[in-house]
Amino acid sequence: MARLSLCELGELVLTPFNLAGLAALWAWLHGNQQLFRWRRDRLIQPLPREERDSLRRQRRAERQAQQHEQRQLALLRAERGLSDDERLELDPVWDERFSHWIQLLKDNPAAVGSDLDLQQWSTALSIGSDAADLRQWLIVRGLLDPNEPIGLRGSVWSRCFPSDLVEEANRLVALSNEERPGDEQRIDLTHLATYSLDDAGTREIDDALSLERRDGVDWIWIHIADPSRLIDIDSPLDQEARRRATSLYLAEGVMPMLPLELAAGPLSLRAGQRCAALSVAVRLDEDGAVAEQRIARSWIRPRYGLTYTDGDELIELAPPGDEALSDLSGLLMLRMRWRRSKGAVMFDRPEGRFRRSDGALTLQVIDPSPSRLMVSEAMLLMGAVVAGFGQEHSLPLPFRSQPAAELPSSDELDRIPEGPARDAAIKRCLSRGVQGTRAMPHFSLGLEAYVQATSPIRRYADLVAHRQIIAQLSALAPMDEERLREVIDDLDDPLRQSIQISREDQRHWQQVWFAEHQNTVWSAVFLRWLRPQDRLALVHVSELAMDLVGCVSAADPAPGDALELRVGRADPVRGELQLQLA
Image 1 (cartoon, rainbow, N blue to C red):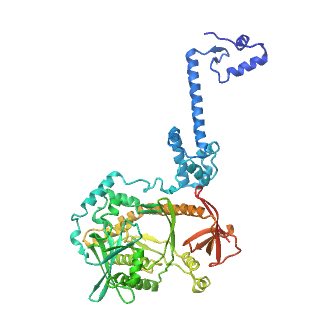
Image 2: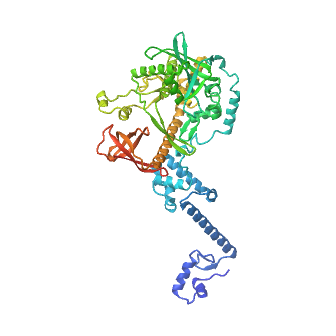
Image 3: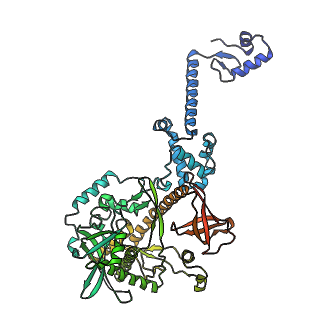
C-alpha cells in the first residue's frame, strides 16, 4: 500500500502548494478524519476500505448516541410530566439516577447541593442547588408523587402483603369459627351488653366495654381483641407484623400491620359477632383506685358498634334501660380524678388532623368528648391492670415509663394564661416515654406501672404483651426478659419510621391546606420562641386545633399573647411553608 510524505500528499491535494496549506493539511490529518493514518515514521498511509467502513460505522453510532442523549436531555429539560412511552425511551441508567436522587432526598436532603452525581447533571437539566429544587424538578416530571411521603419509599409499608400471606390470612379467616387451642379456657361473656366506640369508618376494632352490676357492685369490663388465637408466634404473618411493628395511619388511609382480611375480619370485635377477646374486669373503690381485678380470655358479643358521636348522645341522655354507657363514663371519670390526684398531667384539648378522601382534603378536629375521654381512660386502666399483673407474677412485659419531670412552679404558671400557652410550658418540661422490660413509674399518666396492651391488631408490642399474659394464664413458658428485650429493640426502627412518615404526611397536607387558604387570617396564641434570633416561634391556632411554627414581626410577645397568622408562602410541590405572625 502506497505511503506518502506530508509534502508528497500536499503536492497532490493543495492548490496552491505552500507552507500554510501544509500546516492545515497536517492539522487535518491529526484530526477526526477517516481516510489516512499518520504513521510513526511520519509517512502517510491510506486506510484500508474495511477500516474506513468500520470507522464510519463507529462515528455514525457515536453521532446517534449523542443525538439519543440530546433527545433524552431535551425530554428531561421540558417542564412537564413524562409519558409512559417517554419513560421507556430513557436509558435504564436514568432510573438508577432518579432512584439515587430520591434516596438522597429521603436520607440526607442537606447533602443535595454537594452530591457529585447530581452536580454532574444539574446544569444540563436545569436542576437547582437545594432539596426543594430537586423535589420540584422530580415532581414536575412525574418522577415523584407529591402526595406520597418520601419516607414511605423502600419502607416495610411500601409494598402490599405478598400473595402467600394473603392466602394464609384467608385460610385463617376460614378457620376462625373452628375450635382453636386455648378456647376451652375462655369464659363466656356474651350475655353482657358490650359497646365498641370508634371513629366512623374504622375497620380495625380493637376494644370494647361492658358494665356488669353484680350484688350491687359495679364491674368495669374492658375487652381487647385476641389476635394470638389465630396468629402463631413466628408464623409468616407474625414475622411480617413484627417487621411492620404498627399500622401506619396517613391522611389517605391506613396501611395495616396485618392483612385487612384478618384485621377487619375475625380479629376485630364486630357488632353482633361472637368474638375472642382478652378481658379485664375492674372494681374501683370510692376514690377511683383499683380495688379488685381479674384477667381472662373470653368470648364476647358486642351488641353496639357505636361512633363517638353516638356514644356522646348515650352518655348525655342515659335513656331508661340503656344507662350502662353513662354509668361507665361516670366510673371512668372517677378513675381519671384518681390519676390526677396522683400527679397525672392532662391536656384535654382538641386536636386537628388532615384527612383526604376521594380527592377532597378536610381538617378533622377531634374534640375530647365524653365518649372519647371514657374510652381513653378505660385503655389506661387496662394498661395499669396488665402492668400490675406482670409485677405480681414477675412477668416480663413491654412496660412504658416516663421519668419524673420538674414542672414550672405555681407562681410561674399563674403568670401564663390558662389554655394552650400554659399547656405548652408544662409539655416543654416532660421527658420522652421509654419502653423496657421492667416496670417503672409513668410520670404524666400518674401510674406506678403501665403497659400498652389495647391495640394488638395495630401494634406488635401490644400483641407481645397479650402473648405473655396468655402464657402466664395458661401455665405455659412466657418469653424471658432477654428475648423480650430483643423483640422490643427490633421494633424501634420501624416504629421510628412510622412516626417520621406520619409527620411528613401531615406536614405535606398542611402545606396543601394553607396553599388553598392563602388569603385567610387566623387568630393565634403565642406559645414560646423556637429561634428568637430568627424570630421563629411556636403558636397555637384554636380554629385549626394545631400548634404551628411561624415568623413573628410583633415586638416581644409573651406566652398567651394574641397574634394574627397569615400565609407568607405555601408551596407543597417544593415542600415549603412560611407562616407570618403579627
